[in-house]
Amino acid sequence: MAAAAAANSTITDAKFHSSFSSTPFTLPLSPHFRTFSSHPKHFSSIRCQSVNTDKKKQSSRNVFDNASNLLTSLLSGGSLGSMPIAEGAVTDLFDRPLFFSLYDWFLEHGSVYKLAFGPKAFVVVSDPIVARHILRENAFSYDKGVLADILEPIMGKGLIPADLETWKQRRRVIAPGFHTSYLEAMVKLFTSCSERTVSKFNELLEGEGSDGQKSIELDLEAEFSNLALDIIGLGVFNYDFGSVTNESPVIKAVYGTLFEAEHRSTFYIPYWKLPLASWIVPRQRKFQKDLKVINACLDGLIKNAKESREETDVEKLQQRDYSNLKDASLLRFLVDMRGVDVDDRQLRDDLMTMLIAGHETTAAVLTWAVFLLAQNPDKMKKAQAEVDSVLGTGRPTFELLKKLQYIRLIVVEALRLYPQPPLLIRRSLKSDVLPGGYKGDKDGYRIPAGTDVFISVYNLHRSPYFWDRPDDFEPERFLVQNKNEEIEGWAGFDPSRSPGALYPNEVISDFAFLPFGGGPRKCVGDQFALMESTVALTMLLQKFDVELKGTPESVELVTGATIHTKNGLWCNLRKRSSKH
Ligand code: HEM
Image (cartoon, protein in one colour):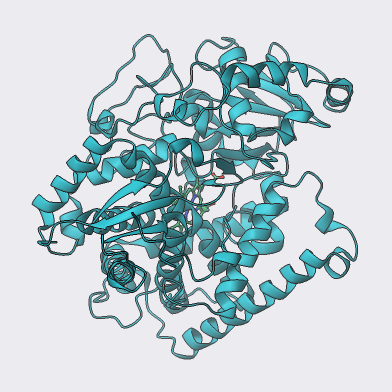
């Protein structure tokens, strides 16, 4: 029997999930699973009461829902030409994560539909041709809308919520920071941080809590969260949170802030904007206190970096010997860059944005990769066989990542099935004509300025029109070309379109696979995150066998920005054979 080792996160109480791309209207207040019968194989294993819940859904539509939809129509100008309309029940908000309902309506109404939901209306897009139009072809006709409203108090003018002018300036400076030598140095960092996690597990296995059978119970979601926090701190601003093994006021403040971001993304009314809310509402007071602690920490790091500034041209910065740099962080790069005299406030916003954007997202990918592998023991064995043959007992390196093909595909397949965030949010700055997309109106759909748009990455990634067996966990799928010539305007899935890419991306899939968005506002940290996940998963599988504790049904899904579990991903861990 597994030992109930006290292996839980050192900051369990404060451990929460971040949210950088959700909306006050997602309202995943209580977790419920997808319930319709076309449900995926692995999801079907976590489906509960499919028939009953569907019935309940219909009967639960009440006078409040009808009134609210009427209000929506009045406030949002009724129909948008020929665009289908889904009338969401407000009561659904309290029933299950919204993105599950968005999927049901996608199957019912098609790739572009208007959602009348409560007092607001949104256009929901589940089609790669339309997503490509919004994210790449007409990207600057859209901003981040409600997302910016939520995140601005936390991230200020960081890249995610930034207005267009600020974004242009900062993106030009930050993107070159993720150059190849930096990523190579980061792979070393990922390895050494993952080693701390592996050592912690080993110690627990050998420690007093062990029952002699050499297995422990762990919440891997919490462990991945700690690992990702340590990595983002060191990689972005050379600060060691040490959260895998320690607890500190700064770590508590980070989790407190992430929790508030999550809460805001799921709360219907932006009450924090009310005058005096930050003094009167206790959680807002705590939030302000947490922000102060993090800001003081970041300000100190910025001050130190500025005091040791060595102003250098970008090209020279990229050619530094990163293998021997004491501080290879992005902050060092940003401060040392010649000709960019940026104020401390902007730098702090940049760092805070990356701290939040790059932490729970990566932890969530690792969580779902393990969740999926634990339900597919053959694939787990195949992954371990690859690790053994590529690494033996050695450590992953930048070069060896190229050989760990199966692990890389597991990471992207986990991102396909559980994209973080499941929705991308935009608001049109001017009127636009959206393409009709597959099976949509050939003339497209005209939308006025100010229209709020959700691009459902979750729907795109599980679309039955663009993926074979979309709900199955099949990492191998990414190796196969898929030219569906029936779909006019979609170039199909073709790995040769992005030669040299280590990981499948939106170019290869012509916007059917969008875990990092696409176009100019695509994630700057995509390669960082993918390599980090590959290294961490490799090192876990190299040393341990992992089994889910309990059934997959017991892992309830919740969503804000990331799709996460309700009570953690509890697993039994065992050491693999002694050669490891
Ligand atoms: C698996 C992990 C990650 C996922 C799934 C992810 C996903 C995304 C997505 C979907 C966007 C686009 C949002 C939109 O278009 O509205 C984005 C933007 C961004 N991400 Fe990531 N991200 C991850 C990790 C990271 C990391 C590690 C960093 C930094 C070290 C980072 C920094 C950013 C920044 C700064 C933006 C804003 C880019 C811009 O607007 O120019 N992300 N991310």
